[in-house]
Length: 139
Image (cartoon, rainbow, N blue to C red; front, side, top):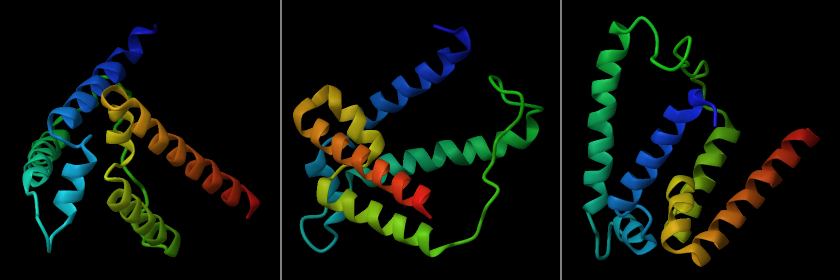
């Protein structure tokens, strides 16, 4: 393995472990969080709040850094417009999250915890990504 990829591997392991420890790989917990009018489970609000706090610190530190530790330059999004494609994709993502109780990161992390159900989700996710790529290429 190339040592340049080691930070990526460590970041991925930490991200997956954080998702698992935070309960994000449990579809029932995610659905409970999304059930605002029923038996609402606020647990994931704390997970999201922790992520927001980390990013607040990161956004405060970034301008003081000359360059990232493991890259030549910082990479920031260059687009800020809202397109129908972006809004439609976000809506599909949200609907899928609500139905499955998983999104891509937790779905992949769940492969370790519940391999069969997570594999079904991951296969469907990959099929959707392939379909999006095919329809995008057809335009």
